[in-house]
Length: 468
Ligand code: BES
Ligand code: ZN
Image (tube, rainbow, N blue to C red):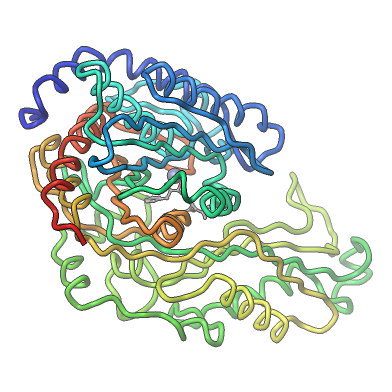
């Protein structure tokens, strides 16, 4: 590990405080702040308070902004003076549900180290990656008593459920949140030891499809064959969503897709990626998707339709003969520019209405959505990010895309007019949203150093950049 290019005072502080920074993260990870479940509302509040306390302890101000959902933590340190830029650091303290619990090697909310990895729900997504920024601020404040830039920290508790209230908050408080750039660590590196800056995220349209048949469950012998089965009807509806080759077959779905520039596609092709490696990572013997695209292009540049969950009828032990009255599917669409989530939901609803068989009613309910995003990859914060990652990891970062979504990234650009730097410290195979989620101990430490260096380098790059 080479950290020689990290300023010596910050590097020394980090080395002396790595153990404590890890202990504190463990305390954060023990709070089961699952935003999707109302039973964890108190835990979400506790996690928000944990972040606020962590900020005030190191010398920032912090408050919890109430929302109709979980609170937003806003931390501030603004003593760098009017000529210094303002950097907004965003992350989320909420986590995905930990189920299925029995598949965790160690309990989801009891952080445990194995093989140089910190295992816990939220370790990489996103508590670890949020907390390392707070430790980077602490490094500066502890060693130098000051920061080279003004800082706003925004930590929300609803990222995993679509960030609905954050968007409204950004609109409402945009004067206070005015900033020159945003940095987010909520993504993965391309490979171990290869730091990465993200150039794109997919967007999202999420729907629930409910199919209802008879007024109640029926005996499948007495009624089966004459009364339409909602489970079969749903299977038919879902099967119409792709053609036989793997394209999405919903009319109009691709109409607004803006192809990625050739240069970006060439850059992706130059990355050291192998289908075999991915198959090995996830444990399958073949990959599949839209024809005419490489795997990385399918993941990063093309929109998709995926069933996330399916429910109908009897699923318990043994066999029960029943014709279910209802069936349900949760279906998400990953979007690329310039697809619009609301338009996609409308197209899906029209399609389902067209293909649903007579004898059942099918309803489409929109859940959350988010716009796709592409970066400009120019300007002081990007240059600073490249240099900070180089300093911490000892090599130039690569530019990657991402198949996941962080809906608020587009909102930051649109509402605050600030460019966003996405530098993530997760790794392939990190099991985000799945059992045995982990973040590498080394990446947590190097991420802290990169985040600390970023503050110095952003101040420098900003000062050197031509004023508009
Ligand atoms: N951190 C992820 C997004 C992500 C994953 C970015 C991997 C880069 C690499 C984020 O917390 C997340 O999971 N977002 C949700 C958003 C959705 C709920 C709108 C997602 O992508 O499913
Ligand atoms: Zn996340």
